[in-house]
Amino acid sequence: MFITLEGPEGGGKSSHMQPLVEFIKQQGFQTCATYEPGGTSISDQVKEILKNVHNTEMHPRAEILLFCAARAQLVEQVIRPSLAAGVVVVSDRYADSTLAYQGYGHNIDLTSLRKLLDFATGGLWPDLTLLLDIETETGLSRKRTQVDDWNRFEEYELAFHQRVRRGYLQLAAQDPARWRVIDASQTWEQVQNTLQETVISALPASEQHPFSPV
Image 1 (cartoon, rainbow, N blue to C red):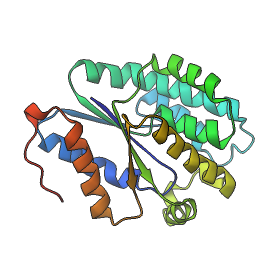
Image 2: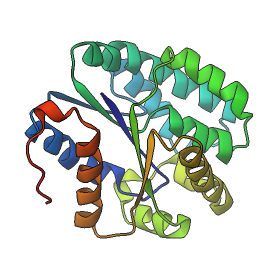
Image 3: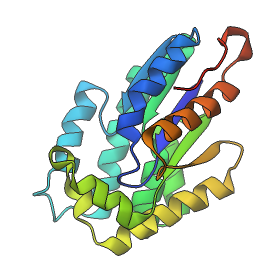
């Protein structure tokens, strides 16, 4: 099973990722935790270019192609082999981030973008996507307190981030069978419990342990 965490800035994906992975392990599943951009040696090198605050002149098309290059390597080196081995893969961001940030955020044609993403991923899309949704201003305010994690994308104007959030919500509305929208403005414990409840309902029942909230 392939699970992704998505959302606008400050939604708390990174803080929830590892506890969620540990929870899945406790249910008796082998897991593989990964992230974007990055997750392999080659992809991490691309990540350094993408997130460098000095690369302000980067064109959105160049940004998209760099993301796709890093993603293609991650899919073929990590995600596909893990899924083939029966491992539950959990990724902090994936192709939907490109649709939200570059598609909706930069107003890039979504039809062309989806074709490119299908090529980069070899047509591999998640089975379950967890959207940690939060008001744009609240999320950016949270992000600014994480000094070491501030990067080039947070430098974009407020309107860009508002378009990103609206894009995520539209993506979720278009594919409700895959997406689950979670209110990330709740306490950390409430959000983590909701994530766990959502995941446990999607995992194969034969290997689950009884659910008990954090």
